[in-house]
Length: 173
Image (cartoon, rainbow, N blue to C red; front, top):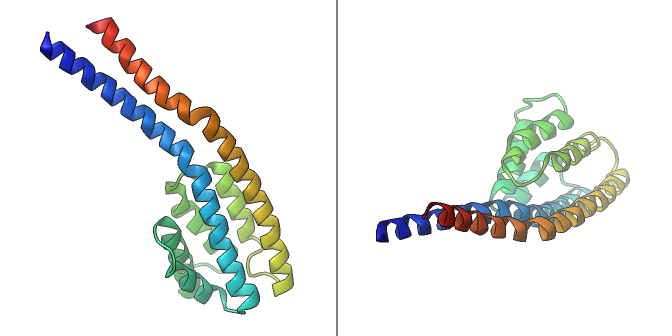
């Protein structure tokens, strides 16, 4: 009897843990979009106001960050410095696919960032500033949608995980 009770509690804990894991995914996307927007603001400052060449600006900002975004910037800078790709767009898109594919950012988020790679480094500073401003607006819209999704789904995932475990416990004990 005690063994069944202990096993049932493990099932409830495991399914509840899975629910919290899925909930974390919903919670981390808006946070990552905000972080990326801040990263881009630093990049804009380096490029537009500091007139820093793109590879140097990427390394400079990567040194101030931690985690996957720092790796993303360093990787992009390496691709540009080693001339692995013939254009900024190709290096940026490769870095988005390679590094940011492992984050909580969804496909539409990454597509938005890839499209930004098409215009990064292709025009003068004033035009770059306009492209950054447009990207901020688009990222804010993605962030708001992600926050709404988080509100709808995060709590539901937690509850369903625990409730599913409780249902299995009741059925089999």
